[in-house]
Length: 412
Image 1 (spheres, rainbow, N blue to C red):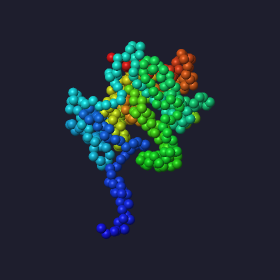
Image 2: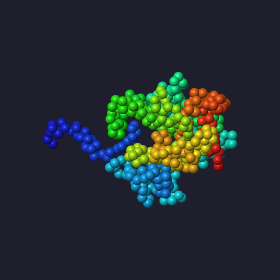
Image 3: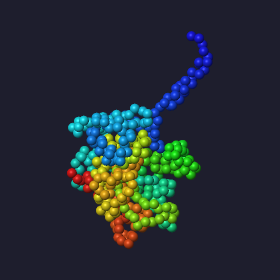
Image 4: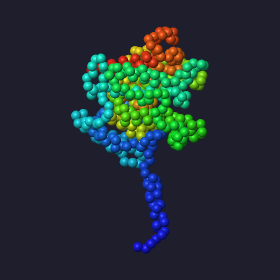
């Protein structure tokens, strides 16, 4: 064979050229910020685990209403073809032929009906519960815009308030037999990410939204990706891979727009609502990872358990707080179930947590009534606050949750 130095010279570059050629023809992947590429084979365990009728009910009635799914999922008589990414072959999900032929799919959480009988004095015996105190609190509260104060008052910081409720709940739930974990035990983040390491992701996120990457916009986006996206993804990792509970309680306080956090507007509005996973829009479903996590949640069959627990907690909290239900007026939420307090909405936490989630949004933090109660702090019994004798707002919150869980797990 004749020696050809020219061919030898360029041969090391052939792999690079092949990679570039492959990249040019590879199907496009669209991911939301910081999302991993979905592994569609993870849905294989759900093959033939759901009938066509159930699949369509959950798509239309809960997870992607208003026809949001129709550009991404083609439903046939025996299977559904699901877009994985633009230009790639679809993922084919086979339906069970009938209710009697449904194949069981493995999952880490248990329905109430699958649990052992519980003694009357421990109605939560064996129930695995993760408490997720919303937001970060502490020195991070102003960054995440969950902080305001009036004059020299104590700051209202949602992340610290939710942690206080969680710490009240732990011993009470354990005394009733539950096994309880916190996704965060103190103020601050669980994620190791920080805004100064998220510049590239922030620039990509702004470009995806077709927004100018000004210095101010980049700073704001790096912070948002830190405290909202990376943090929630880390908590989802803890829930799905480490804690593996039967139920997650996402604890939050609500708010109306308050304007300048140093000179906030107080309101007379005060209300409550709870959220279950659902109501994803066609725009949200253009992201391959959101489409994947929606289907994983749908096929995991958490909806009915999630709705039933949420309705029980909503009823108990309505009695404990006396708060009226909040009413959404746009299409980013869907009224479901029988309770006027429970809605379906697409939030990262309830979408990424693979088990049933009770996502609780009581009290308007910047209402006159709630502000007075937050300033009063936590205390035992009742005190004269806001013109009447009242429990601590934190203990009232915890009372409603405990009663709702006891009612649910005590029902036959």
